[in-house]
Every structure is written in C-alpha cells, then in structure tokens.
Amino acid sequence: MSERISLWMLFTTFLKIGSTAFGGFMALISVVQNEVVERKRLLQPEDMLDGISLATILPGPVAVNVVAYVGYRLRGGLGALVSVVGVTLTAFVLMLGLSVAYFEWGSVPAVGRVFQGFLPAVAAIIALAAWNMGRKSVKGIREMVLAVLAVALLLGVGGFWVTLVIIVGSGVAGFLLFRPHQPNPLAPMVIAPAPMKRASLLSVTPLLPVVLAAPMFHLDMVLTAKLFMTFGGMSVLLFGGGYVFIPLIQEVVVGTHHWLSTKEFLDGIAMSQIMPGPIVLSATFVGYKVAGLAGAVAATIGIFGPPALIMLVASHLLEHIKRSAPIKAALAGIRPAVVGMIAAAAFTVGWMAPQHWASLLIFVAALIALMRLRVQVAWVIPAAGLTGLLLF
Image 1 (cartoon, rainbow, N blue to C red):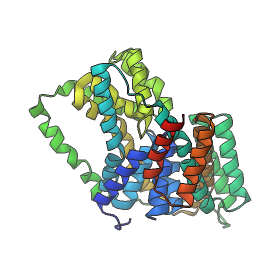
Image 2 (cartoon, rainbow, N blue to C red; image 1 turned 45 degrees about the vertical axis):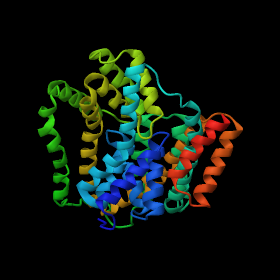
Image 3 (cartoon, rainbow, N blue to C red; image 1 turned 90 degrees about the vertical axis):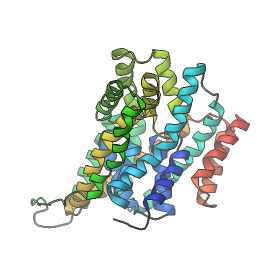
Image 4 (cartoon, rainbow, N blue to C red; image 1 turned 135 degrees about the horizontal axis):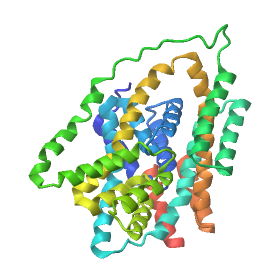
C-alpha cells in the first residue's frame, strides 16, 4: 500500500475530480483513471481495472465504490473515507444549493446548453481512458475478442444482467484461456486473509462528533435516522448503476413515504443529471425536502456509506485471493472486457450529445488537449461547457 500521497493530498485530488466529473459514473471513473493512473502513477492500470470489475458486481454507486477502492489501496480505511468525501463534496454542496433554490423559488437554473457542451468532452475522456487501459490489457487476439464482445453486448442489449454476464463470462473465459499449464489447476488453495487494518475501523470515528452534537441542534433524530435507514437499505439493493435505481427510489419516496410529489421527484432527478458525480445524489434533494440540512446529510451518507463499506471488505479480500494462479487467469480475462465496457460507455455518452457540428469540434478538441497537450480534465470540462453555451 503506497505512502507516497498524504491524506490531505488524497482528499484534494478527489475533490478536484469530483468537481469536474460530469456525465455519469463511467465519466467519473475515467477521470479517476486519468488522474491516478496516467498523471500521478499511483496505481497500475491492472489494479484500476480490478477495482472497476469488483465495483461493477457489488451494490451501490459504481464510481464511488471505485473511488473507495482507490483510496483503500493507497491509504487504507482512512484513505477510502477521505477519497469518498472528497469526490462527493462538491456535488453535494451544489445539489444542496439547487435544492434550497428549488424549494424556495420553485425553479431550476437554466444550464441545458452548458451540459450539452459537457457531453462530447466527457465522451472524449472516456474514450481516452479506454484507449490507455486497452494498451496495457489488450495484448493479443484473445483479449481483443473479449473486449469487442463486451462492446457488442452492452450496445446491443445492455442492462445490469448483461453487465454481470460480461464480468462472469469473461472471468470464466480468462480462467480457461490464460491459466498456467500445471497438472491440477483446480487444486484447492487455502488463502488466509490478513486482519483488516486498524485504519479501516478508525475511519468511522470522524462521524462520532456529529452524532454526539446532533441533540444540540434540535434535530429530528427519528426522521433523520429514518432517512438514513431508508436510503442505506436501498443502497445495498442498487446494482447496475444509478439509472436502474430511479424506479426503486421513486416507489419508496413518492409511493410509500409520500415525501415528494411525482413532479418534485422528476425535477430532483433532472438536477442530479447536471451535477458532477453520480445520479443518486438525488438522495440529497429528497433528504433536504424531508428534514432540511440534517436530512440531506443523512440521506447522502445512507446512499454512499453501506456500499462503500462492502467495497472495502471486498477490496481487502481481493488483494489476497488475486495472488492465486486461477484468480490471476480470471482477472486476465475480465480486464479486457472492462476495457470494452468503458469503450461502449464512450459511444453511449457521445450519442447523447447534440447531433451538431459543434459536438464533433468539442470532442476532437478535448482529445487533442488531453492526449497531445496533456491538459488536465479540470480545465477541459469547463472549457467544453463554455463552448457549448456559445455554440448550441
């Protein structure tokens, strides 16, 4: 585990990433890959692909789970905590501000053309991430076939179950294609995981002052706890990305608890789509409507916290079981499939952009800025948004 980066630097790195990662979960993952793997070289590409593979099959927001994995790999449990807080803080503050404005004045700021400018640039960022990861992981015809099959399945069928089939199927294919030649490759292996590091247990202690101070602010602890439990319970049922989550959250907050009207819920989803970060930040909107600032905090922690803890345990186990030859072979098959999934995401995001010559201009300019000029994503995204405001 690397000690080359301090907790403060880890926090500020993910704060910057979280402030510019518009366009969905794969966009955020691509920005993380660009910053952590390509620019700072804190992780190897294979490690990043392993984290994405693991996050894809676990519950919760995939991108935030990947961030938790990266933070854990770099600085243990505290590293995971500061990374997740950093990557979600800007989006939380923006979503909270929009929620206040919405419920005070009943309107959402007009940012449509700026967001349209983001999309081609986000497609370029994702495409570049797929290219950089592919150069390391797609080393031959077999890996290329796995990557192309992943692209075809996602674009042709799509959905969580297809994603799961891709991960499991490519793992089986990797075991069959890349396992080392030995007399009994299926011989059982007993791997004893090391105990969880103390930092993982200490990572929850920053929450204690908040809990102890809550009565001083006259919070409705029952309602706040209900929000946390509701969103925490839903978070462990979230498989396949934020868009899969929309029907579930609508059923619970509109149909069951009647916390929002249908119009308010749809407006909250719309606002979450123009925020950097995952779409499940609509939890902040719901929490604010129900119980103000405390409700927004409780709902947000509920939606991100339990899946992140599951991810930490899985990451810890992965670091030990991946040393076995069969697991290495399976991961060798999964990695090119993940590259294909990322490439499919680039196509999907690019297709969502306006069918306009300016979209192609922004896409090409973003690629040149990232590949040739080595411009940071933190500058590319705002410039694309400004261009979209002027040209669309």
